[in-house]
Amino acid sequence: MEIMAEGNQYDFLPESEIDTAALQTFDFDSPQQRIQTSTEEFSAVCPFSGLPDIGMLTIEYYPEGGKCFELKSLKYYMQSFRNVGIYQEAVTKRIHRDMVNLLGTQKVKVQTVYNTRGGFDTVCTEGHLQLMP
Picture 1 (cartoon, rainbow, N blue to C red):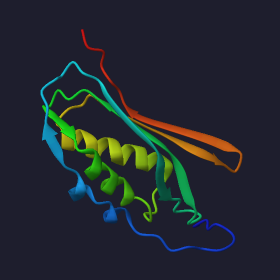
Picture 2 (picture 1 turned 135 degrees about the horizontal axis):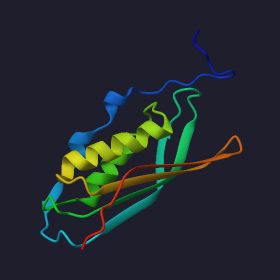
Picture 3 (picture 1 turned 60 degrees about the vertical axis):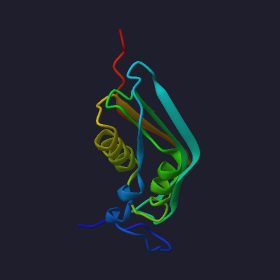
């Protein structure tokens, strides 16, 4: 039995519309340096209701793969989520996977902190940073 949300339904795009091709890197050799970037402007669409999920996204990593992501390209990648229907938990997992593949390191942590919705606060975390000696 499929459960449908009550009320208005809004169209959204499939996950295949996330633009990983927008991501670019530059060479950077500093595997001991922890890099953190965040934005409060992240949004995607709840596939259950079609309503926007808005929140803060933080990406932390060690560039042990010899690469950093270029911030303008990251912004274009993040904007591609804007009209995509994807659950909050799946967003975090997807971004983590894309960052691991892009940077060539497992030392990536992605956290999403979503605005309160329906009285619930949601924080999703994927990956971990191994402490450097």
